[in-house]
Each structure stands twice: as structure tokens, then as C-alpha cells.
Image (tube, rainbow over all chains, first blue to last red; front, side, top):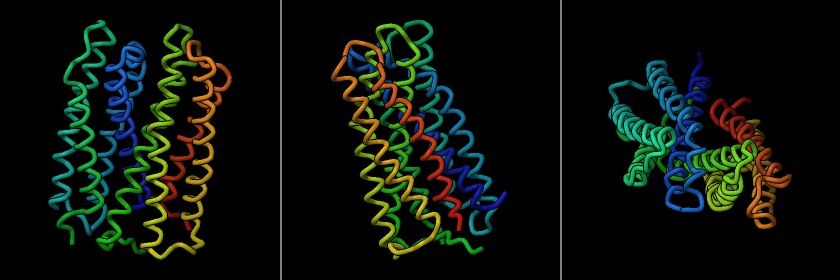
Length: 139
Length: 153
């Protein structure tokens, strides 16, 4: 696979990941309003599908890109930082998704920390994007 | 083909805003599409809430994201001195950006008019048009990402 195709697949996966994070954030915001709380969880199935697919493919194609191009190395600081941030984001997204599935399945009360976790996820994704664009330390 | 991997530092901020705005745009249009389609599929009273949620997401999240993406696109074009370029990928970007902007505006208007006209019922024809346009927009944005990343000549 060529560089352009790998880049397209990597970026599309990243868009999918951000879209899933948008759905998770929308659920958390909707749950704060009585008007939307009951319907917010109808967004959860889409987030539950998009988050694992987007995050997994983003790291797979990202690592593939790093291995494919001689100007990149998996040992570069900005790539290591991105992988660490991806693990943090994956853990937060996974916990949020599991929490929403629990609420949907059993009708349990929403996790009060969900909004804070969502904001942490958004910050993590923004820092990953900054890292990807600025590539600190790349020569 | 030579690929420019490291760009001048002065391009980074407009590119960050362009890509970040595009990601927020795709995410918010998708949230709206999922809410509207779920409202379309269900016959229970929650469909009115889903319609409102989808319409408001288009208005308060997708439209501002579109402006961030589109203004930053002009900024990065000027940084790269590509304002008068005839490159196909730039034309594709303008097509997705401007035609997509028009579709987004129509989707936002019809969905919010549907909420205003009939706030307590299901989707209705207007909101269904908004839902359909949101799905078309997602397809258009995938095309835009393909054009921006592969830069076909």
C-alpha cells in the first residue's frame, strides 16, 4: 500500500475516532438535560461501534505509516507521545462506552463522572492532533 | 513522487484549525444524523426529543465547526500560495467545502423549522430531509478526506 493510501486510511480512522468521541460527549451533555436524558442513550450503539473500530484502525495505520516511511521511526518522541496518548484515550473511551452500555442494559443511573471523563477524552484527542500536526522533535 | 513530510512551522496553526474544524464538523454532522435517523426509526415519544437534539446539534455544533474549517482552509491556502492553483485536489476540497456548506445550511434550516413547527411530534417530512442531507454530507466529507490526503492530480 502506498503512502497516500495509508495516510487516507489513518486520517479516516482518526475522523471515525473523533466522531465516536463526539457521540460520547453528546450522550453526556444530553444526560444533563431532563428533556433529552431518555433519548441520549439511543446514540450509544453508534458510539459503541465507531469507537473501537476508529481507535484500532487509527493505531494500526499510524504504525504502518511510521514503518512504511523512512523519514519516520517508531522511536521518534512525537510518535511515542501519540501512542501513549492513544492508550490514555482508548482507556477513557472504553470506560465511557462500558458505562453507557450498562445504563442502556440495566437502566442504572448515569455515571456522574461521565462529563469529566468526556472532557478528558476531548483534551487527549486535541493534544494528539496537535502532536500529529506539529510533530515536535521531528527533523 | 516526493512527499513533503515536514512543513514550515508557519503552516501548522492554520492546518491544525482546518483539520480540527473538519473533525468537529464530521463529528457533529454524524451526531445529528444518528439522532435524526434514530428519531425516524422509532415511533415512540422520544422521536420528538431526538429530532430536537439533531436539529440543535446541526445549528450549534456543525455550523460553527464549518466556519472554523472553511476559514482555516483559506488561511492555509494563502500560506502555501495556492490561491490560484488548478490542482484537482484543491478543486475537490472547494467542492466538498462549498457544496457541503450549502447542503449543511439547508439541512440545518429544515431540521430546525421542523422542530419549531411541530416540537412534540416525530420527524415529519422536513426533518427527514434534514436527516437524509446529513447522511449525504458524511459521504461528501469522506470524499473530501480522500482528496486532501491522496491529492489526486
